[in-house]
Image 1: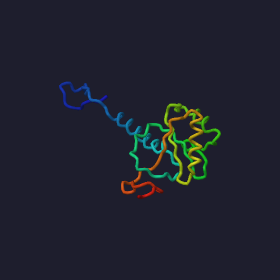
Image 2: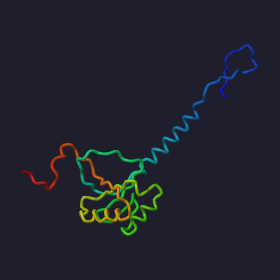
Image 3: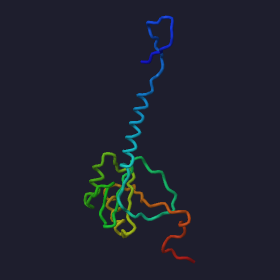
Image 4: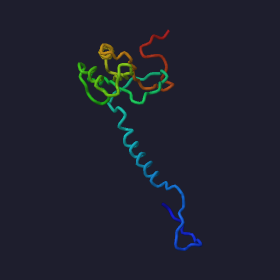
Length: 153
């Protein structure tokens, strides 16, 4: 509560001012800012995967995407947690925010053979996860020419 120290007719009583004290509000905002600054980097996936590039238009990323990654040594990971191929579907089912109708974002290193990528997609499909999106890096506009291995007329 704030008081005013101005000269009044009555010298013994201080009159109250009715202003809002914003100091606690600013303290709360600063604490929330620090929490979000610390938590934001933790919500990204930091597996060292060399993704291929794509010239497709990027789509909006959901709030909490579920990433399944195929590393160069052909091991699998959900987010940053390593998982065996046999346990892939059961590990996805165990996630609290995962359901069969949500998208699974599949990331694969450039050196992963196509057959291995298709094998993981088949495991996901057999487990009921048919909504799969492939993840790639955005290609710069100059590099968005014909695909590698395409025949030029």
